[in-house]
Length: 142
Image (cartoon, rainbow, N blue to C red):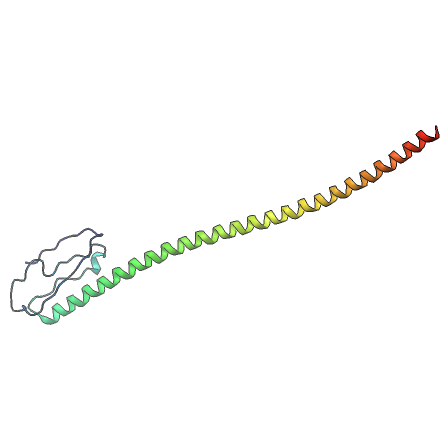
């Protein structure tokens, strides 16, 4: 009889095979652990017929494919996480770009306002000087 055991998903699974003792009718219980808890039930490798070398080879291939499938799923998950990080960075960069553009517009508006105010100030200074001259002329003529 073959027993199955569940192992936590965070523990690595190693499967050892030996076709040399195929004549032995009762293989050790731990020789073929059926442990792929992260796989859907329909994707789980089925227990092999220990009397058949071909069945053992098919089981071994299925286990290797299951391990590769798990690795690919992990890699996909990592890539999806990286994609989310990159999208977040891109969003942040776009926000900063918009902020920088807004700051540049505000800077230009303030520079223009500064030029206008300086021009108005110089005109006021000129007008004040003219008024002083007129006032001094009136003072001198009276």
